[in-house]
Image (cartoon, rainbow, N blue to C red; front, side, top):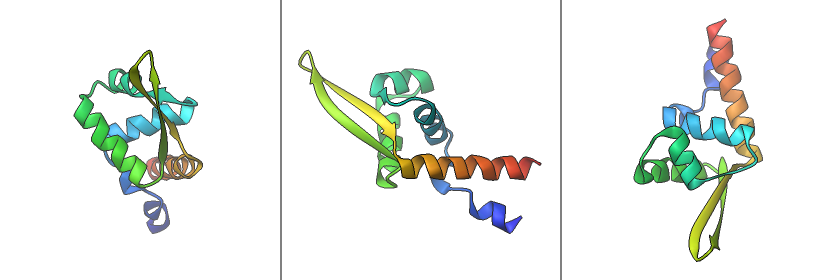
Length: 96
């Protein structure tokens, strides 16, 4: 049991961060507004959770301008995908 618990990652304890990673793991990338609509959160709430995941190096972003408007795409890093899969596997083990 202790071994399973050590694989749980505090970064994914919040349902919004869990949702962000779930969306990014199954998609190559998603833009800010798509994530916001998908998760039903405010700009500020999403931005703070994205920053937390970015600080852990679980996600990366690419900023550009499209038709003079800022556009930010987010994607999961290899480190983030690995950590997320490990976290989900630990949850599955706990449920058995």
